[in-house]
Amino acid sequence: MSEERSLNFLEQIVEEDIANGVNGGRIHTRFPPEPNGYLHIGHAKSICLNFGLAKKYGGQTNLRFDDTNPVTEDTEYVDSIKEDIKWLGFDWANELYASDYFEQLYGFAVQLIEKGFAYVDDSTAAEIAALKGTPTEPGKDSPYRSRSVEENLRLFSEMREGKYPDGAKVLRAKVDMASPNMHMRDPIMYRIKHAHHHRTGDAWSIYPMYDFAHGQSDSIEQITHSICTLEFIPHRPLYDWFIQQLDIFPSHQYEFARLNLTYTVMSKRKLLQLVNENIVTSWDDPRMPTIAAFRRRGYTPSSIRTFAERVGIQKRDNMIELGLLEFCIREELNKSANRVMVVHDPIKLVITSYPDGQTEEMDAENNPEDATAGSRKVTFGKTLWIEREDFMENPPKKFFRLGVGLKVRLKYAYIVECTGFEKDADGNVTTVFATHIPESKSGAEGSAMTVKGTIHWVSTEHAKEAEVRLYDRLFTVENPAGEEGDFKDMINPNSLEIIQKAYIEPVLADAKPGDRYQFLRKGYFVADYDSTPERPVFNRTVTLKDTWAKEVKKA
RNA sequence: UGCCCGAUAGUAUAAUGGUAGUACGACAGAUUUUGGUUCUGUUUGUCUAGGUUCGAAUCCUGGUCGGGCAACCA
Image (cartoon, rainbow, N blue to C red; front, side, top):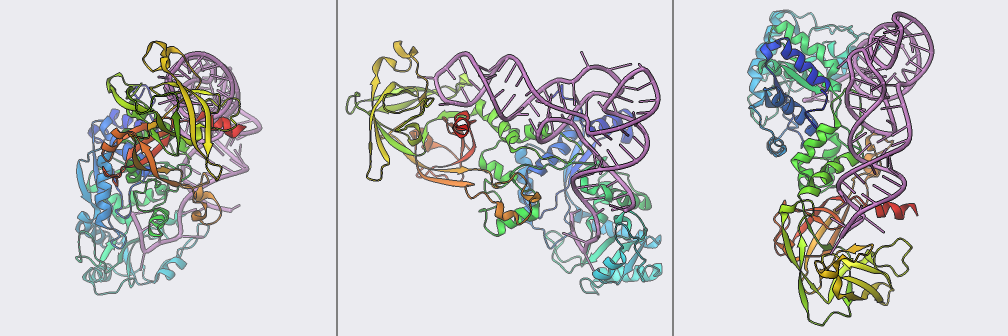
């Protein structure tokens, strides 16, 4: 299918460039995160794009950390970013850092000063803002704009030496204070920050702004196609201006629309807030849209790559339905995940016609979608745990489960007919009684007989216990960022439901963290890293499609 | 009321001057020892007004709507 897919606009540009011999047909991209947070699903789109494009056209991709702001950055983030990219299935050609280029960037700045294209400004941040003008009014020149080259050189050198406190001076590009593009109104190139950098330590007391580091870093690395998101479109003329004044390798920037997903937020600031304010437990809390969280939730790398492929690459703003991501993981897990039976909310089923103390080993196929997955034995007995929701005292017409007089098949076992039930003092059903049809045993002669419903079960005598964590969407509204008010007020109060005591088939006690299963009729689950043989813990990746729930909702 | 980007079914995404197609969703049916899967069918779309052309989603002009830009953030 992917072979037949038409080209997105970036692939078209790349193919044209190759056809025209631009850069000798060489393709070199880069993924440039700032190490100030964990990567999220939107970054995954960008990673798949940058690495995918290079891979498709025989090129390379650099991983470059744009670490120009030491106060927000940390090696914890560097490590997580590398882990997430590797997990997604991509290898970078070079691991690089903008901070590797600090000396070179300083040299570029000196060159611009010498050419009269940069100056040291002593104005405060407020003064600079005041003279910047507005989108509809031109800015005014700073009183420091006409300093001599010699003075600028001396001052800039002193800034580097640490002679001035934070905020005392900045280095600015001398472009055009009347430009209709705000980014061209003498943007700041360097600011003074006496801050410890995670890689360069205390070597620098000035740090380049992103706008002075990014384009030149691409140029230094000879990046042919510098791909970023839409909000950097107005920065492009500035990057081109620097490249032209410096006469260095002309990387070209192309912009695509970032990914937006329903029922979540994607801004790093908001995600950081969720973590810091303990609204979620961590960056990899399975409700987060981070790559680490999707990994912990049980998503596969390939499902995320497929998703990135399906959402496409374009320049128009978009809001992707969470349902598409869920489709991608269901589609894959349906083919690969072994089926097991787990009872979340148990009531007892007693088969009165079944001999006391007898058990049988039933054949259970592991995956009907995969003949090579084999089968296992599940122990059947007189008393079973079944799901509370699989019995109704007063069942409606199309309820194909248990109720007095109704028949269901116990998966892999017998057809049973419900004969009665018991309630406790509070009126809750505790036990259901049934008789079985011996000749209906799965695999036996009479097993061809059919009933409308099939339910899952585990033997009360053999079942083990586990914790099951049911995750749901983090927000109650499609676009929390687009609503009025605090996004934290739109948190889904039911985004996590923990079942302390679910009954599992004994085989599940051997699950290793990361093992994925389909809990029959329930959904896809993965063993969490909190899981131990004594206390297995499973996270719900995604529910099964549930047309019955829809039916109930309609009624 | 400056500059920039964009507008195709509910959501995405194709068609690059020549039959508006695909996926997800929704709806209906078949199959089913998972109300899962699978299969079949149905539904819904070119923002608007002009222009160019034999022919326009596509090219041109005006309008409308949406988004971005005024951090010593990236």
